[in-house]
Length: 460
Figure 1 (cartoon, helix red, strand yellow):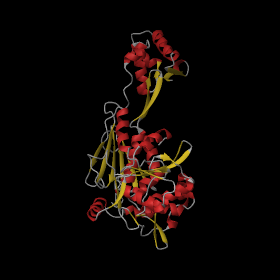
Figure 2: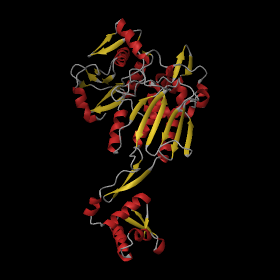
Figure 3: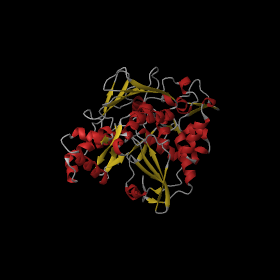
Figure 4: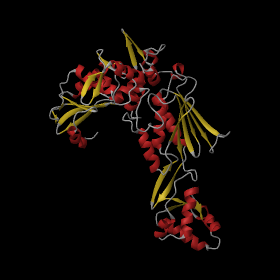
């Protein structure tokens, strides 16, 4: 959110998805408001605003307010995992914006009270409505349960240190306490142990605890499976596994460049941002209770297929996947969001459609399989690279057909020689063809490499 949006934000009345509170709000009151929004469909709380006239009053101690928001979320049962509060300055006044994501998998209470946001009020849930909500969302999620065999020494201190440093001072003050508030630790009496999410994200030896937490990457040379392929199996904690898989896919996708006017435009087989979204979603939202199978990503010349174990969670369907939200693993999603790998705003699917269309590719497809969920990205089957500008554009620049054909050869083969030009146009004199190539060099389109017989031309 940018400061330019604040006047509009403050002008919105309180409602089911918007609340304003003063900077001296009580911890319990804030916790109840957070739980009520989480039990509804999420929303936003702006702290440091007079709710009567929507005028900013500010917050006195920003760090203290950040700690208060996390403490209020921890008062919820189970602990509510939310993004870090957003600090915004408006008219020299500091306010704090708290986002409560929609599509959360749990039902939350504060001091035994179950509330739900309705219009601008936090109302107690009636018994029938509470039962329905428990049926819809289920009980405590698997990722938040303490792992039976893992202890704190089984986690990698360097990974924990790197994580809290990424979040900032509020997390660095007490790393274990922050991991408790992120659902990565579980405390019973005085014993603190890693949760399943904590092990998946920070374990020393992930394969020991979760052999199914692997990513298998395969590239085939054509459009079908064959004996010719490249493969990589990644066993690592989730954030590191995503980074390694993203690097591998970036290295193995087809890529190149085309000329648009006098400028070179690089392209990849699929938009890199879309590939990352597919990869991160597969890792963050898969069902880790399914053993014996990991995330599989298969790269063909015409498509990319990503299969993740587990069907769509909650009320999600193929039909509403672009509009609805439901996080099977909210702690994992939030930690990945803290690392900047994913957003909890839920716009990822929509962005995939937009970016694929901008690249001139078909929209992604989604399908539920017997044991999981399949996402497919399609490349242009007719060509492994985007279509170049029309020949009319080159003609408008004064290029002749021989020069245009030379550009086409370099786009495809990345170079051309005088001899190849002569083979293409055997009825044209050698001197004329030499002048054609020299003109392309003078225009800044071609670059000549080497001298005399060994010379060749590439795109500049």
